[in-house]
Length: 73
Image 1 (cartoon, helix red, strand yellow):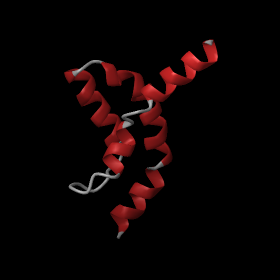
Image 2 (cartoon, helix red, strand yellow):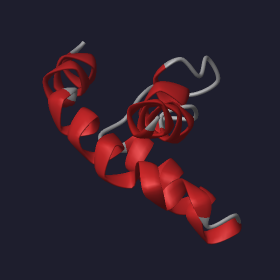
Image 3 (cartoon, rainbow, N blue to C red):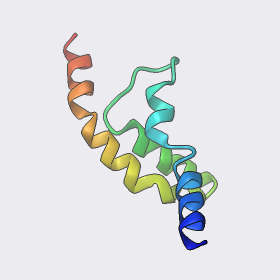
């Protein structure tokens, strides 16, 4: 039962990952730490996305080479 609850909470926490939201947003090019910035803006508005902030920071850091190659082109 505890594993099921933990899995459900984890999935709900990852539901609106800011990095993924900004990465697939066709209106703006993806920039460095766009997901973290998005999560901070949403946390100021709603408070809950602050749970996703560490995960977005890690994924944004992993995507830095992608951002750098986009800036070169």
